[in-house]
Length: 184
Image 1 (tube, one colour):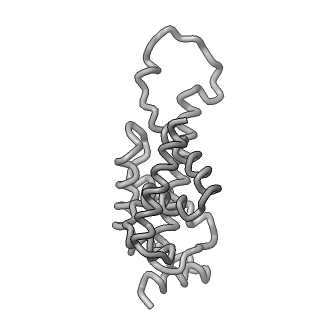
Image 2 (image 1 turned 180 degrees about the horizontal axis):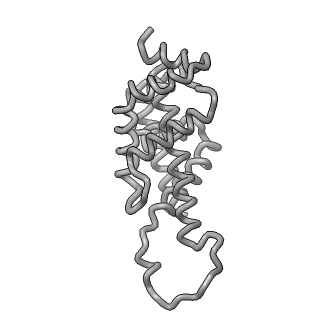
Image 3 (image 1 turned 120 degrees about the horizontal axis):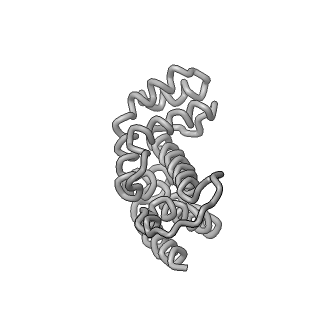
């Protein structure tokens, strides 16, 4: 049994210090996943790589349980947590950009048209991914692990218990379905 698997088992047994050790051991990989996700889609936001990894840690600490069995499953689980953090952040920023709870005023400027619509894009991808999950759950998992988690085909195949060729086929099929869903 590897060190990471042993740490995961300690976390599952309720050892709070093991979660710190687990994040410390996997911190470079978690930063890589977070960086790959943020570079691709979130521009001009306050959420950066370190903040995303820290938010992921808080989410794991608050969860009181860990649903992973080994390193690959943990990274897949972390990618899913990062996705939900990014979507929540995008929704909050989008609501904030639209005024949140502030009374609405009519403005005659063109400033709002120049704003980056990155948060709207993230929410659209998230909603399309929910529709894809209803159609085929494995396709949605492949997209989540690859797009949101930055995992390789081999890592995804190990996590899902399929071949890397199956992952590549699923990725191609999912991309076509998501592209069609996002155009409508």
